[in-house]
Length: 350
Ligand SMILES: NC(=O)c1ccc[n+]([C@@H]2O[C@H](COP(=O)([O-])OP(=O)(O)OC[C@H]3O[C@@H](n4cnc5c(N)ncnc54)[C@H](O)[C@@H]3O)[C@@H](O)[C@H]2O)c1
Image: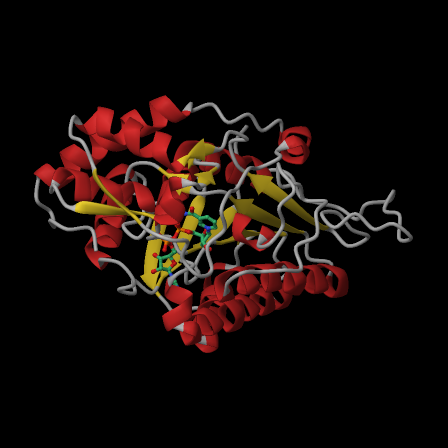
């Protein structure tokens, strides 16, 4: 299914997920306006490279990517005014759990103030549908597996998680007050080509290839529901095609957290297949043909031990079926990594 005659605003368009999503939208031949502030949380050359890829594929000049910070309300409003998007996909955020312990201010600026500015834009310019990134980190202290949208998410373990949970609350209030259909997507550890240098796949690949030790937190007793980038993009794209409406069967005496009397829904986007950290390292060692030097470390503050996505709700909603197995995904990631860094665009993914 294609998005026809829609104008789409993608925030965080130079980011890992944003750039892959923009490439997907180009296939639908829709007009896209991307914004990003190209910050240096990780090497901005990688963001630039993603934008170059988009420009190369954008034969019909359907996409424009502009350097705008979400916290600059006037500049953001001008974008809404000039382009009048039908759909907004908000992916711009300060990501990362560990970084939020040292740099709390950037989380408030981008994830709270920036998100409020996006909501105001949707309100003032009658956006048809807002899709926004939440995160598996909202499950925080929850230990019931797999994580379901019906579980309580009132116990975040990091400021990052708290801002993502706040996004869900803010979006719900705007959906209710201003009837803005909104879909919140809780992504689970996304990986793949052009991925994020601050996440385990890139950090480990770099260390293994350079024969440097890797820190194995909680002595390896951790697991993540790794989800390949094309499955994430597929889910976001399909969600763009389906606007939530007020749930007429919403039972206010026993409210289900993921649905509402307001046109608002929340979904997990994962692979429903948690991978143990040690198996993950072994698979990467196989792909790279080099053994890792492992340094066992205790659990990091703010981290969760395991994530595991229940994807029943999203499967029912958009027929979501993750199609990239972990073996295939790691193979694709490792091949991209070797190839990309061989060309020495920049050497170290820091
Ligand atoms: N990658 C994952 O595993 C994962 C998991 C859960 C949730 N998420 C969420 O998905 C979204 C996309 O993540 P990603 O992995 O592509 O991260 P990313 O860091 O690669 O992309 C985010 C982009 O947003 C931009 N940005 C940050 N603050 C901004 C601001 N104030 N104004 C304008 N642009 C700004 C950054 O420059 C970056 O290019 C984020 O909201 C993130 O929290 C990602």
